[in-house]
Image (cartoon, rainbow, N blue to C red; front, side):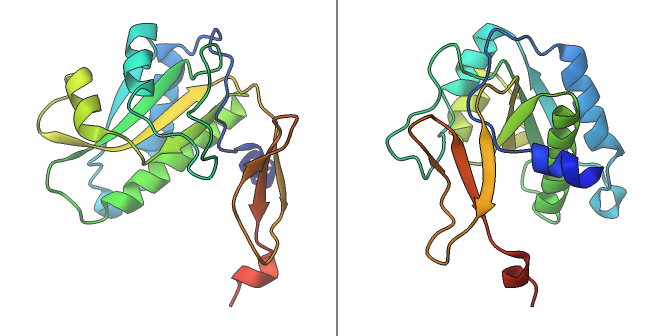
Length: 187
């Protein structure tokens, strides 16, 4: 059921780095984005696939991990993603790009969850540096980076308190994600 897949699809930040994610799997995930709706059916997004260890190191160095976990700089070596999908948009194009990016990213992550993989979307990216490191085409801008890999962490959903929606980790490194009550979000 779709509810089970959505519940399984969490923002994972620790992975089994030695577990390879093939270029074919990444292509299959992008194909899900390709088949998804697009504003005016313009299909403006482009995708750059990364699964070679040298390129993964470059991408990792440009990401900022887990804003609420202020004392954590990201996963240590051995727990880093083994692949990335970088979503690109044409330069100076803004109309509906965010819509398409969100739809594409969610399609990719749901596809990963179906394969027992996990991922995390990154908007906090050193875009100029990453574009240079990967020599991405000048006519495109980085919209979003999606980390992909085999998760090694447990992520649990819990009811949010009135005070906070900040995610957190307990002493056993279980990642807790508070969610507002359904009755609190329907007006």
